[in-house]
Image 1: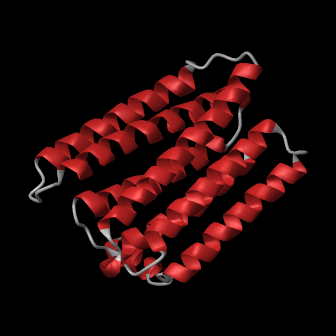
Image 2 (image 1 turned 30 degrees about the vertical axis):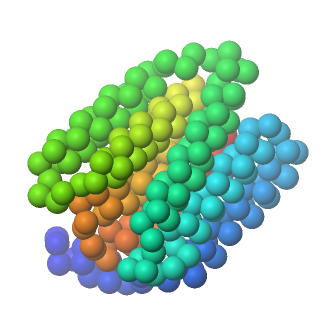
Length: 212
């Protein structure tokens, strides 16, 4: 099974930073087209703004090779993505509130337990990590996990109430973020993980933007 998995992953190429930026620009264009198709509704415009901040995050993380990238670029990228998550959560919360649906429905409760489990696991791994972690890295990691958790719960709440597939986008976005967190905090270098990030990330963005 492991050999077969590696064989399958070998067909998926590692993409360059330039390609990542092109994908990110394409996602911005996609968000703009979705907003246009929806007659520039408030939620579609908010999601376009979220994607623009995601684009700024992609620029910060992929504007230069990893070995030459200043560490503060990582923190800047994290800030842009945190803003993006907050804006996405705002769009979906607005949809929930204007439709007078309950926020704390079974979907939100399931998502909350999932995030708590993920956060607890992350803290456990951080405590027992052999790498010495900078205080700023730990603070950013905890703050980032909390913010993506809010977005994840909000989208799951909306998806449960309206029967949409947006929860798949939230989960995909969460997976890509968690992989980046593992790579950054625990200094893990893996081509397979890199490939997974740029499989789940575009899927997550597309489904969050479109599945409303």
